[in-house]
Amino acid sequence: MRSKGHHGTPIQNATPYERARAGIGFVPQGREIFARLTVQDNLRMGLAYKSASTPIPRELFELFPVIKQMLQRRGGDLSGGQQQLAIARALAAGPKLLILDEPTEGIQPSIIKDIGRVIRMLSSRGDMAIVLGEQYYDFARELADHYVVMERGTVLARGKGPNMEIDGVRQLVAI
Image 1 (tube, rainbow, N blue to C red):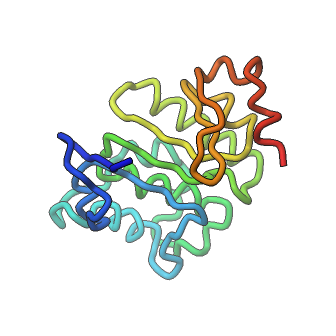
Image 2 (image 1 turned 135 degrees about the horizontal axis):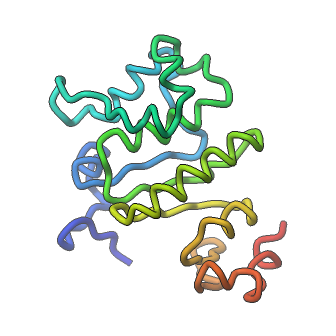
């Protein structure tokens, strides 16, 4: 299967900044924030391909109040807020597609709820597609419009999010 970007352009060989320019925001597993940079500089990295005068969108501070309070602190000092910073950085340039890889991994329940709230709100706006790679069944079930269960690149099941329970998805993803 070939990966296609905007207007059918292949993206598998595109550089990260070309993918960002094409409207793809990515939050990798493990977050990969810049621990030594300030929170503000981490957010500016999300705007790296735009003009240096591009302001950090105020909406990011509304979505994640913790990052506004800590703009001058190092990203590595955020502890549980690192995932929120990683998501905010990916949202900074206003992507049309947001890809989240295991956003709940190693995070406390209160932050998982905050992230779920933000994903739900972003999804309801209808101006961005969201792909969520997630092993935490309950989190995925609450957010999914559609689901695909894969194992080693093979699709085991797919369907509508509201049908996950009756389709037996929990048993498919149980470890």
